[in-house]
Image 1: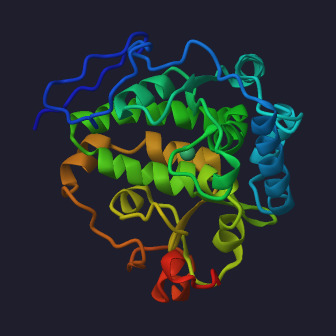
Image 2: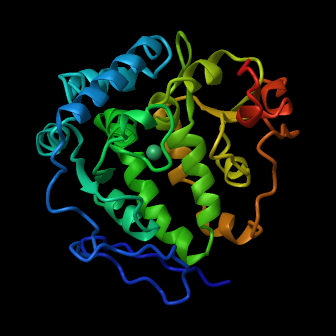
Length: 311
Ligand SMILES: [Fe+2]
């Protein structure tokens, strides 16, 4: 069976094969093919106050729950210095640490452009912040989710390498039409991952760390499953985007995550995957290395829509 080749040169945006489906997002006319805004949004006093309130709220929850590398990154990059961070300055500091930078984009951008930025160690961040009446819930990732949630770990050299490899893997997944599976891996690691540290479980996923309720639920509630990450397994698992997760996957370390992902034979994996997901997001299967088998009671009671307690 022939091996599908993925691009290796990411200095320019690689050509997308005609048969690859991409979401029909309309690029604003003032942007180039990289979708990067010419400058960061001009945030007003209310916007800076929103950042500060969100930051303060998270800091009441995260010490002792966020991965130590995340807390170290927050501090090194001084993301609590007040107001929405200036991306040019943040990028200078981050580049000095790991070669990454942060670029403003108007909204969710097409997958292939997102992957291309990651492959070049650029993290695209939403160029807006939620309005005060949307304090707890946002449909699209804003600068708080993207910068507070994702950027601190980019100061960690191993995690920084993982994110770049993920971007490269994206181009391969597109060639195999397996973006859904790769999306599940992103979901269960970058957005909602847990890591086993010496003092116990910690959260490193940006979706957990940038929101008010999920850190406690992910780490302490009896409802969700907590299962050691197996990349093949996670890529076959469905996920929910509008509620707390019924299952979290746990890594031993970022080095383990990196090796488990990079050393995987993705060609073989993608050929073996079906078009849909194999496992429900509540499933515990025979091969799982289970840390905690959840009661799933929160989700069985109907989850967010029903007003169930996140226990
Ligand atoms: Fe995110």
